[in-house]
Length: 155
Image (cartoon, rainbow, N blue to C red; front, top):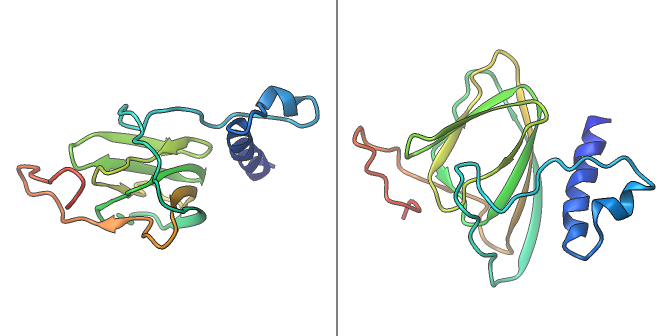
């Protein structure tokens, strides 16, 4: 049931851009807005959308306890919902956010970051990417030096 509510919420976010709102659908379905924002998790505004051919990708990640994802950067907007477990995300600038089941995350765009499952159970995250056809969803970045000399956007 939780997953259905998550998917319904994301569908409603999509519908809201076509003029249909959660209030319009709410009379016929249970509606819970999971996230609606113009900001990334670090408080910075989301960049404008791509001018290329849009492509939506939905991935389900399962991250074992103790696993640290590599430093990477996204060139396009993406958002996720933690379905199970916990995840801690870190930016190369030292910002951090801890997430637990049912928390939404508007990912960083053009800012190097990584995630770590610091819990003792698997973390399961459903991630929605609003990318561009033929382009990667993320790119690897070099790890920051001790002085944090990471170039913005991970050139």
